[in-house]
Image 1: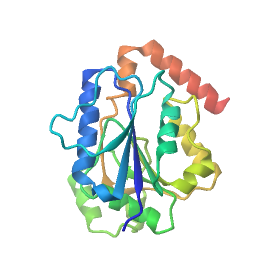
Image 2: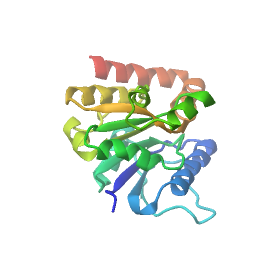
Image 3: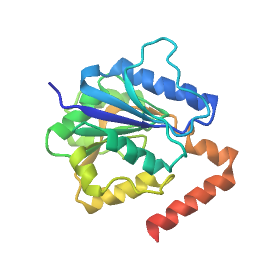
Length: 228
């Protein structure tokens, strides 16, 4: 039996589009992940629209509806506090997974050689993908990708060593976590054997266009906290 993975989905549902997007994220997890291998924790602070399961297919999940709305990093820490798994996945509500994504990432942590793994989420051409399909997951060519924040998988042990996400952080929460991981000597990689789709503009970047002043204030606050 595989070790349990806790998938922590943090939402900021402020529009109907974000609600529909979140439902799609849950649907993709449900479609492409064996139910006996994970638990799902949805952190959903002060949603403006509900998460609906109209087709009655969603997996059972822990739903943390928080009020007042804490910062983004605090939401992820609260999700991690609920988690029972040996492995933690932090996923944003604009990230869509594909078939075999979980065993594809988990194999790196199971090997004992790595503490954190990132999937590939950047645009690639078909030839690039096909070339790597024929390589071993541990081929050096498959472990040279660039890490990014849409989905991060790590061991519970390394998460606890970092002290968790930086309370008060939002836009730069992941950058702050990268620094924490580096400080504790984390062994990490980004792989081209697992691909996800990350809309990116579906969450924080939407605020950049709808509330630039608010976005800039959050960015300045995080930058001062992380670098000051």
